[in-house]
Image 1 (tube, rainbow, N blue to C red):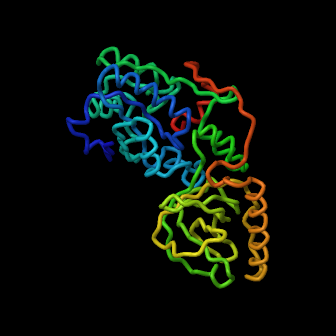
Image 2: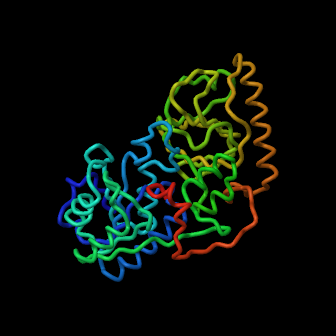
Image 3: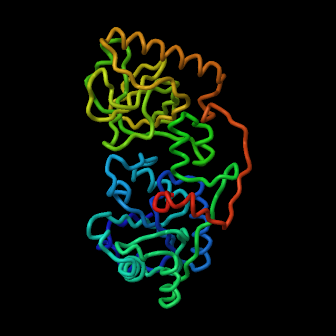
Length: 345
């Protein structure tokens, strides 16, 4: 896997590829279907598969804090893209220089001169360029002249509804982790390295592993029953708070995890946290005694949840279950649903 940051780092070795463009936030099953579609052409043409992504994502550039929360950090996104067949990821800085390119300039600089693309797979409502003239029709027209193929993505559906990043966000925000997992093709998780913090949890008998989060809108916020996985693969039932810790007055979002029935030093270790059930929202308490009482209630609820899940539940995620519906992949593209997700997926 080659990660290329910016057009200036492209070399002759990166040219000649099958490419797709988008944010690929979450790398959900819809994205995975697109990558499979690209892999078919990559094998046919005997060239690598390149995924073009943007950092920050376009909505983040234009909307700032009002942009939708991310499902995956860039590091995790790249790992997932690799796992699903991408051989190169071109990460373009979305800035004034990039946004000022016309649609034709984007094609010339990125796709033709930069990547030497042989075949391109994008949504048929994909729009780009400061003049808003960059669209599927322009790509097809230029491709016919310049000698590269262009086709639109196949839509992947679950329960007769298109899989999209916005749909996954809605499910996660409502605590529906089981259905979200079906759309993602994996259990949703948060990752990070445990850092030293104020260690206030120890003063009330609830030591927590603290994982700093990026200062971006949060996909989840509140208190959850979770499964915490250590770097060695061991898993523990746990309670986690995702947010700003209003009782403490933190200005930066943090993931605090209390592992039930665990004793040990986690500082510096990487931790993966799988949310399983939402217990409550964030609340500002009058004092630490009130906070401690509530934490005891949260722990008791989490223990009941894991007890109901049964023995061996740590190896089966997510723990909740939902009736399976029909799953289909088609070449039909839902423009109405994709309009909000064109650069988001």
